[in-house]
Image (cartoon, rainbow, N blue to C red; front, side):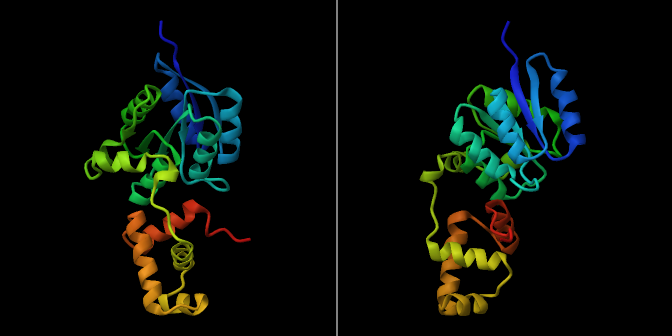
Length: 217
């Protein structure tokens, strides 16, 4: 008999975790072996029980799912991570895949999506929610599932311009703060958005949140 896929659940909503626990433990080939309510404890729990798959919420207070995924993959690259979130934005999908996630599933999708993603990840393959596959090409999935060092990198100036934009400064204000011309700021902004495939200000802010840029101190 094949051993069950061992899963750790990381989500800051206890109701969500309990629902997933009931769903997954009812299946003969999946067993939940641990759970955590934030990224920090999720990383610790994962290191403790060493599951096959971690189901990871993306937006959590403190250490978010992106940072937790990076930490897990850095120390245990063999452990698979499946992102489970309500966010379908390209920026979220890109960053989680870059961090090493093997799957990306929407909370609003049918439960079968998550089950399939867990089984697929455990088998060493990648899985994207059906609602996302409609607009995301296979080539896109391959591109953004490469190791982080292979992804387009921003220059220091591009990063700083994007960061300032996320904080709410206008192009003119950023130009003054960085001692640049407005035109140069616009060029850095355009280059950064093109590299990261961000489509507008909302994407920039969400990307900044994932990177932890908007935290004070």
